[in-house]
Image 1 (spheres, one colour):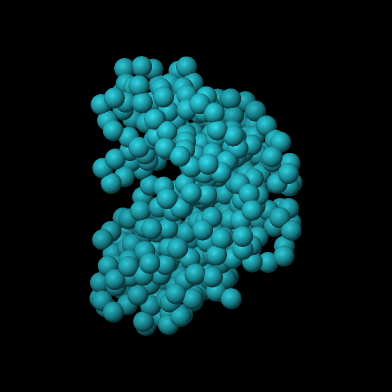
Image 2: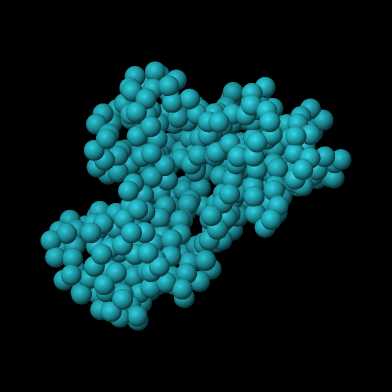
Length: 385
């Protein structure tokens, strides 16, 4: 059974504006299923098929000519030279429609924007959002949601979570990471991924990470770009405004899927997460990633930041959109107390010149107006913010 995705409206709108659509996203986020159901009139070709790949590489013109009305071309990052031929093809016939997808963004976007500038609409499909999962089955708790994550197979099949992620990581290492020249030792790269999961929500210290992995800082920088390019992680930059106080300059690292992060941290059940010392980091990651998905599913480019000063006063998430700033503090606590407002209070004191809407999002059930802003349960935040 096909499950509708929130990104569909944005995807269909882009087909009215561009002859070529590129849909990126991690492996097994549902790109192929979505595109085949949304564009049933277009033939489908996977460039992971060796025969298809060989034809596309050796004779790209013949390959594209075999699709006189257009096609869905999957894992297109394997043949980036196709883009120049696609440009000529769609310029010569305005009725053509090509929908491209890929799970590896490494150097790909540069090639797409160079060859297909003005002809391609770019969107990303991430794993299931909280609201997409709610359409399938009830969501019981914040810890369960964060532990399970959003990969479709974990919600539409009976595959055990540890089996899924073991196979997922192995496939990712063998198909994506191994193909990149700057990654040699896959065992070391796997260790690097686990260490990254242990640094969720912390200002990035590449020197420390390099020491723990046992590689050079330049290697860590390259490997982080691999994780970003394959939609494993995203970075939150520190807020750019100068408040005349020293502020953290390093970005923070988050995983697009906290189910994967929990697996990398060997958290094997929701109950284990409830008492785990990484609970706060995982909850923060989960809610930020969900708010990020909500915007990418609407076809937007999220403008997300965090604020932290040298005394560790911080606000977990700042969102700039529609001419205003949302300041969101995230807590895993189920009980409200005024101490949870400390970060927002410091932000408000420094931010007198700019109006922001302040929110304290937590794991409890109460919703109420506070002098400093709005206290909001996590489920409400994911629907309203």
